[in-house]
Image (cartoon, rainbow, N blue to C red):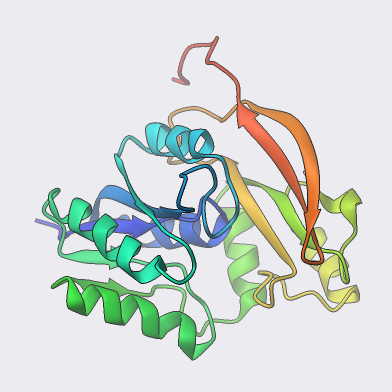
Length: 224
């Protein structure tokens, strides 16, 4: 039998690619996502909880939610891992690619929880990972941009193979590993059906611009 695992889930392309890569080796039984203290936005990409809930629904797994400020983030994450352990997991899959500080946190919290951190994307060239993601057939839309490198016209765009050249011309890492952009996955081969997202406006903060959106009530049957 395959080990049971949870995926540390941002809702974006890297966490999806990590899930996609590891599904053959692990039984994915839960997602783990951190939210702000009131639970109104995810900590990583600023997504509404209904968006993350809809993704979990389409993946057919529960989502274990942690809550906290940046100063209490670790405590909240440990609480979410405790909830995920109820599903019999032994591993947690992360979508980190670079920077030692990004890997240190998963290894620390997993060790404290008696779990094993899995980093399937770690250290790989981001251009190759970008291409691999697009070729999965998943649909990821840009939801946040850093204004100094990408303007608001990029918001809502779907990641494509051709877009990689545009990123390169602007000095943007293909996977946005320096904070240039964030994404949300709205459809994918592992989803039972797409997310029908509804634009609710946009906002600017700390040198970044972001889309705000919700998910429409389902009015169509699940895909065959």
